[in-house]
Image (cartoon, rainbow, N blue to C red; front, side, top):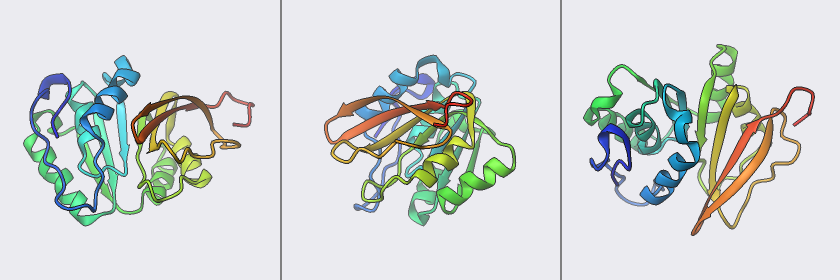
Length: 189
């Protein structure tokens, strides 16, 4: 794994040992940042189910103002910490929050936090629930974008999700990225 762009382009990112984590591939990360484009610069970026932290680190490398990493797996938390320590672009611009992603999203909403870009990458064998998406919508800036990574063969049910409206989906082999936007006020989802 390596940085695919920004000031750290080409530098290695420490990956997992074994099969407990499924990091977002370099190809999908590069495609994600092509989709996000200039929205990343100066953005507050949330990397939920952060794994190695590669996506949030990439956002920092590409000019995000700050990145918040949500993760509960202890091995992944150590990887995020190690990768942040190796990346000069992260100094003072990152926060790691350990614990259940859904609970952290709810806490962040209660604190009044918001993010211009949210990357949500739950384990492929875990269904993406309406509750999780609505919790993410609660911290998505009104002008923001949410990118959801999921198995291409198992697209999530995005009907009737309060606060979000689905956009385009992009397929990369077994992986898909689906873009979601804040729902227009009064649209009901």
